Length: 201
Image 1 (cartoon, rainbow, N blue to C red):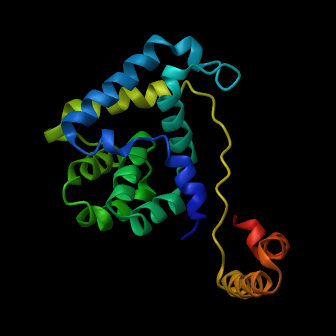
Image 2 (tube, rainbow, N blue to C red):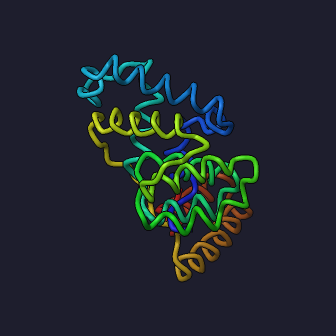
């Protein structure tokens, strides 16, 4: 993994993959997001100083799409089961980049009930027509334009531990366990807070 799992899960928490697992519900959901964004463009421009609760999911999608890079695509398609593949495909369709293609192609078989969204993302990356889901493609392109109106916000995706750091974390884990046995929770917490784990908690 390139990024700390808790950071990735936090980033994607409000991006409801279950609303776009199936093609029919995805079209309804994306259309609603697009329509809300078009209707409330003047509010979108004021984010984050002005936030409007009905736009929360649109903000979340914009934040996740803005955070997308090759490492995040790799993590999502490798370490997060079929849900990660669905998230990766949706975000890649919103922010297409040639570097994402190989990850999505390799992960396609991990999401046998969601291959359509992988195919849609691959078509967006290639800039080709997705014949079976042309309406979805039209809406996702319009949604991409809407999301472009949301000012980009920095997200804190921390890098996961290197091999050397993993060894330090294993040592720190043993030290915390030892502190707990000898001095209870308060002592274990103090050792934890002073250990290599503080970077990854």
